[in-house]
Length: 365
Image (cartoon, rainbow, N blue to C red):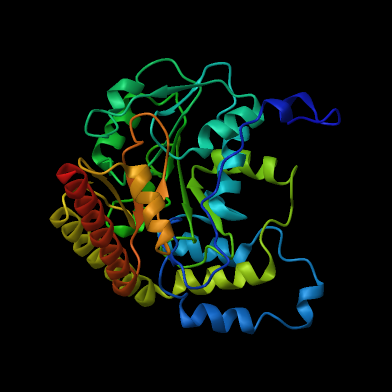
């Protein structure tokens, strides 16, 4: 479908498709990698204290309190911090400010599917680099002429981590390329590349409050990098929206970053549940890609992934299925609470048992 009122660029876009957001509160929702635990009580208190008369005023366009909190947390300077309305918006600015060049931007063939969407939106040429047979990023494959490199670490939807020492080795040899590392899931056991920022001016780290800090509904993201990279992002942001974070979002984010004890307790719980879920899925015959994120990537040699997705949905359990080359036989399953994980496992056992019985009956006929 097209409209005569659309600009040429709109007609050519293939928009990103977000995970389903069901209206039924009884659904076991394991499809969009949200945190199953509530935000820190300090976050809720801070939001409540920010709902008075001041809401009639614009928020701080520079989010100085949040930048100071993030700078303290990561041991960086304030001018090495950029904040935006979700990491998706931050990434959109990254593509426009840092990755739009004459040479193609490079990213993996299996990764966050918003990357090619941004390229289409901004007219950026790109080249996908295949993951290895074990779904790993081999940075040697990126040592080709490029206009910038971006990859998620841990990668999505696989959950595979790239060792930070390998990233540093690459940065040493390729100082002319901007390297953007999307760390949406880094807090679930991986190592952040933030420690490399002061040594390598070409690396930018992007993170979010949506996953490990339970604030997906607030839409808060940020980037860490050399002040020249940050200035490029600020120039784009201030040409687009000078007030990306509301007063409530700023208050929530500061409280979340300062409550380290709650953050660490929640991430420990999720990591523990991830390992228990992975073991239980393996016991059901699933193959699991080792994950350092808050989800697992699972396939079953005896059951079609699309079939399992549909059957789980019929039983009120939502997971994510991507009908894409190389990964069409995988399900991406968010790590939920122990109760949610148990509901998933019970549903899978029932589905597999029912299909096995049906196959047996067909054979008897």
